[in-house]
Image (cartoon, rainbow, N blue to C red):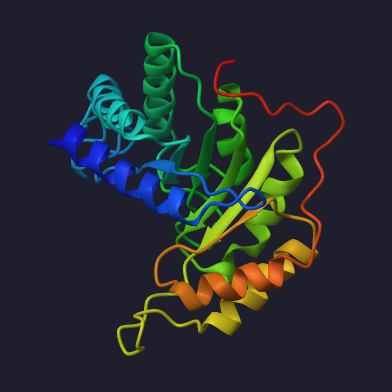
Length: 247
């Protein structure tokens, strides 16, 4: 029921956006394509490094089915997010390009990876810079990082991405710190802490799009919006593109 679920989800988001949109502050629906619980690059069997539990084509077909539902439901853009395996992301990008070529509808695409540990690499082994160079052919509207370590530990990696991805916008929506089952929200950071950390990113000129991921509440998002709104967004390099996927 993947297609039906995504049609329904996009329609609900479309209704909410239409309800709260205004001429000076429109709202847009991002159709999110997550990483799935499978990885095309890493073996699930420590005794067989060549083993895989999913193929590129299987991922591409699944992503295409989901994206078709999101498109039918009325999304304004696609968000390939929480990427821990670049090959999974490439399957999603391929699926989106195929879908948009078939339908003739071209939507912007945002690509967001996730750094899974303090080494500064995504799970499939790439640094942030290598990740960007692996997906930049998709000509995304924005590239960024989300989830994972929280803003405190994410800072050097969002700074690195802002430097290397000079020809596109940069997004960042971190978790509210690290998971903590003893806290009220299940995560360490209060709205004020998360807001101040993301504010520093904006003040340093790293960001064009900001938000929150796991553990962030409406209060967290309100703090981020209030604090980040004081700063000018990051400037793109001369000759930068803002084209759509494969446009």
